[in-house]
Length: 546
Image 1 (cartoon, rainbow, N blue to C red):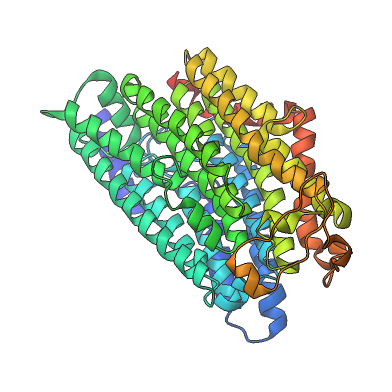
Image 2: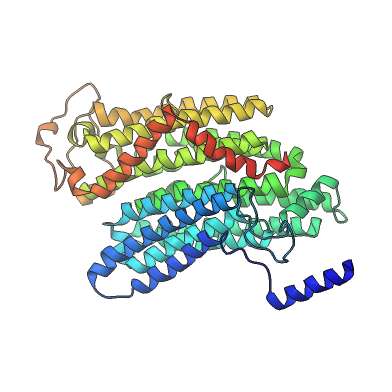
């Protein structure tokens, strides 16, 4: 009878095809349909359609993806897979995992996408590259991130990283008449290509050693030592190359070399998107791969990752100290922050997963507020990307000064901000996982970061305004800053440009982004319980492994 039943199921599967859970896949379906719709509507000629309806549709697509993720979050409380190659109970061989870890990251990517659209609404990039094309590329990049963090198969993992990367190469160069933007796109293409090639080589070696592309099967093979002949050296080499491939995408030292250049040259809104969403995607894939597929070899890769995390923390924070460009400073800051988040992956525990996801959410809040301020300043003055552009901001534009200040304090980990809660959780996970030495490095890195985060705060509130340079002068470098305690002969001659006195009225969407995320930094820093409860679901998605 069993033989007959199996034969019947196989015949049904052959006729009907694989089982697909459309509800579970709804966030990906929304993003795919929305991206195609934005591309098509963007072909229409009326300016009203291109400049208002297309960005509006892009925002609605991301909001729809968030709504779909919330529905699936309740529909699949135990983390069932999105679809199966074979209609079997449990869907163990599914290439995608639509569990709560993936769904929380989907929401994070979509929120970052909404903020990016709002910051780009009046930007040059979206006009030069085409509203429909720009919005479609952004949506498809988020779709790739969703596939990347959901992948339970080596092939799906590689497809995800390529789908998220290729649109970003174009978006970095979307200010087509600015040399810095084109250089940024080219450099990101080179770095991304090297990272992808290294990753696929490492994944190929892992497949050769274990004989499978499925994460669960690979994890079982590593745990039980069932490797092909000479597979031990092959799998360890594959794991090392995989770490390098992920490190390129997460801007982990020493594979971060062009990250500050890309951050500086890309349109600022895209820089903000890469700093938050792309980093979250890389760390999410780190978590799923090393805590599922490679958990059986944790004793081998964990010390390697811990060393890389420590180097990243030091290199990123020290490199940011001498930067006068805010975007370059945020680039180096992002390198150091990647080291913090990588610490949670090293632990390989439920507490480590929860701490990492919590810090990814906190990092989204703490970054988007300052980047929105930088975009607003770039609209007003040619040196808006430099510290000199922030001088006197507290006096003339408090609605922008306070979000920038709160974002900097949060990134520094000052108590009362969500950054402090995030770092405390990471330290707790490291100490519990017997990595106290790495927790000490994290604390030292946070102390070093005060040198550049507080410098921004001091410039905003303690320096007199600096006259905006001409565009030609700004191209050669930032203006000179007067001493904090002294005056400036140019202070009385400083005149407000268009919209300067009422920046909140001139750019309401930018002020909204800055104030909303700065408020989140303070709110969750004082009331972190909602974040704890939210991220506990992400940790429970992989709890069966520990």
